[in-house]
Amino acid sequence: MTHALIVIDMQNDFCPGGALAVANGDTIVAGINAQMAQADAVVLTQDWHPAGHSSFASMHEGCAPMDSVDMPYGTQVLWPDHCVQGSHGADFHPELDTTRADLILRKGFRPDIDSYSAFFENDQTTPTGLEGYLRTRGITELDFVGLAMDFCVAWSARDAARLGFNTRVLTALCRGIDIDGSVARAQADLRAAGVELV
Ligand code: VGL
Ligand code: ZN
Picture 1 (cartoon, helix red, strand yellow):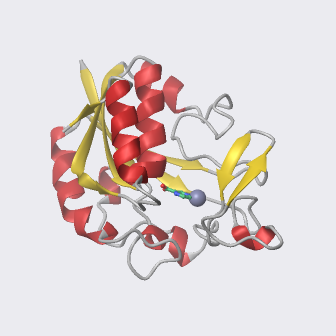
Picture 2 (cartoon, protein in one colour):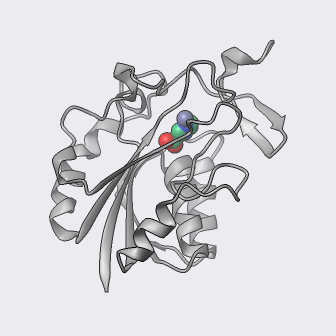
Picture 3 (tube, helix red, strand yellow):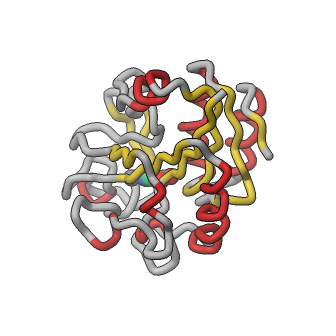
């Protein structure tokens, strides 16, 4: 039984001062670094959008961040411009221990589709390749931490459970955006999907 820690989107833009700051997003960095010592493998994900990405409200006339629009693949929340490839905001938080990572997985790089989950783009069918990476390494147990609890952590953990991984979310090492109760909703959905919330 091989066990991986999956650290979701611990990037400057999701921390205080960033373009899509999650409240207290930076306060979990030290705990995540410590948690890495318990894992056989560490994977970091990095939200990595081209300039002008279709998830940016600035690309949709008359729309503001946090509005929702219909995309060919389903409903999409619109965000402030964030995690633009190569920008400071897309860099990992400076105190995150990136040296411990076996794999850094970038997602959200296709201009026309967003990718919350570390496993699939938001059409829920286009794979990122992470499933194959984990399976070929014999990894069966996954712990999720990072940002944001109600979007990229939740979508990743839900997909992990659906794919048959033994899945936990370490909630003390996550922080959420929380749009209209979305953290509580995400946690209830995860429990229903068989994810253990610790
Ligand atoms: C995320 C919104 C947009 C996340 C990424 O990491 O949860 N949320 N892009
Ligand atoms: Zn994003």
